[in-house]
Length: 110
Image 1 (cartoon, one colour):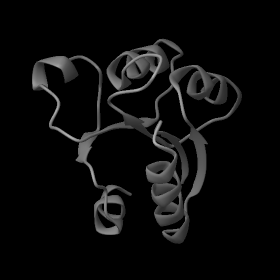
Image 2 (spheres, one colour):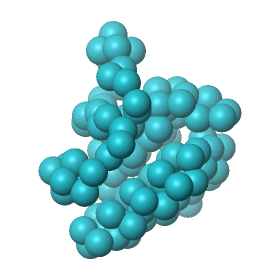
Image 3 (tube, one colour):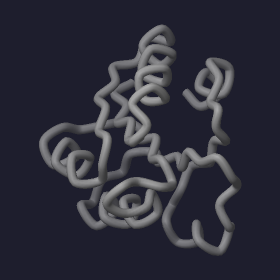
Image 4 (cartoon, helix red, strand yellow):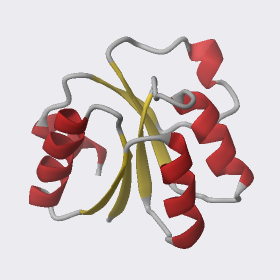
């Protein structure tokens, strides 16, 4: 699968990219929402892992923006805490992952 990974913590991003790559996925990393949207405009992705807290917005707002682009990719929110279900309502979120994300967590997604 082609995965868009959006995570502002460079170490966490590299670890998740490595784990996803070992699972056979092609991964593009963005460290902010602006860069993620640019990637999403120019490439097709099967799935996105969006950090809930980003330096320029939050993962929920980014998910909304991706959806306005008409993209049908599966979107997962990654966070150190469970997001409020009310916040996820209407966003067509495939699921959430709690940090730290393990290889088995990622393997269970796709």
